Amino acid sequence: MDRRLRHAADLLHALPGVTLSALFGPEHGVRGDAPYMAAVEGGTDDATGLPVHSLYGATRESLQPSPGALAGLDALCFDVQDVGARYFTYQATMLLCMEAAASAGLAFVVLDRPNPIGGEAVEGPGLHPGFTSFCGLHDLAPRHGLTVGELARLFVAERRLDLDLTVVPCQGWRRGQGFRATGRPWVLPSPNMPTPETALVYPGMCLLEGTNLSEGRGTTRPFEFFGAPWLDPARLAAALSAERLPGVRFRPASFTPTWDKHAGARCHGVELHVHDVEAFRPFRTGLACVLQARAQAPERFRWRTETYEFVDGVPAFDLLCGSARERTAIEAGATLGDLVAAYTAEERAFARRRARFLAYHG
Image 1 (cartoon, rainbow, N blue to C red):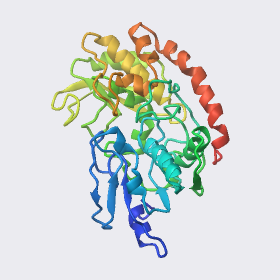
Image 2 (cartoon, rainbow, N blue to C red):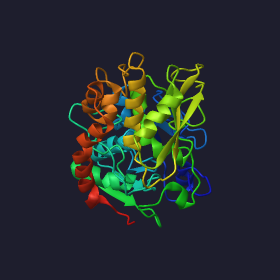
Image 3 (tube, rainbow, N blue to C red):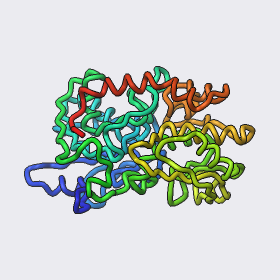
Image 4 (cartoon, one colour):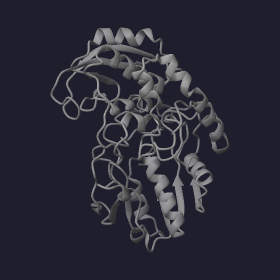
């Protein structure tokens, strides 16, 4: 959307001298209204009458545009609002489209947008060999601190793509700005990303997708609420407060999800209240939430083992973390300090790797 809430497809379709030939929809669809991890069919866009090719169907092969879908095109244009987390699949879709464009000899244009959780902080472990999935196609920190334009330049260099890439930069954005500071309207990039505050906690609280804990889907504050029917909210809030996590406080809370995990059952847990955005570390906070919830009721806690983002046989938590290290350490009784110390070198290494691709200043 632009500042007047006009959709990019509608704007490009109306431009003189430009032929918009087709639309390609990532997870959640061209208009951003499909549920998470739900296969989206192709078809025809109601507003423009253009053909829509789904890039999130029922198979792994559906994630990348086919040669037939690209036939007759001169360029692919990527204009999608990312949220700054490795797991959020839009940047994975961009990478696969870049590879397809390179193979087909098409130009690739990225219309850059701000990273809504800021572009300074980097947090979390690297992606280890054997743990790639659609929530981690390239070795990025879970909170990577890059715009999609900066990511595109990194992908070209590190994947050695022979691609005619153009990045149209943001004007006026500074690395330290969160989305609220831009003055632009927040348009949900996916149905469970209702506010910029949701995006801020997401690089950590998405880890709960890899467990049987509710991450608050089916409530009005997804990823800010979490819990399960068997937890004691006061004990959990006290245990998390004792971790002295920067920038966040925990309120004992109960909620009843209307769908997804524990739908219709009363869950008990906490609500996250971020009071210092710059100090807050979402990945560390997400690890602490999993660690303390499991410690309270290990006999009820479970890791998610069913197929996750088109990968079988690997726990979803491992795919999200980028290796089995965090899960096995938790099972062995590691403290939060142990977990953070184990990935700190990877976090710093990624911060060094990304430095030459930064296009915006603080």
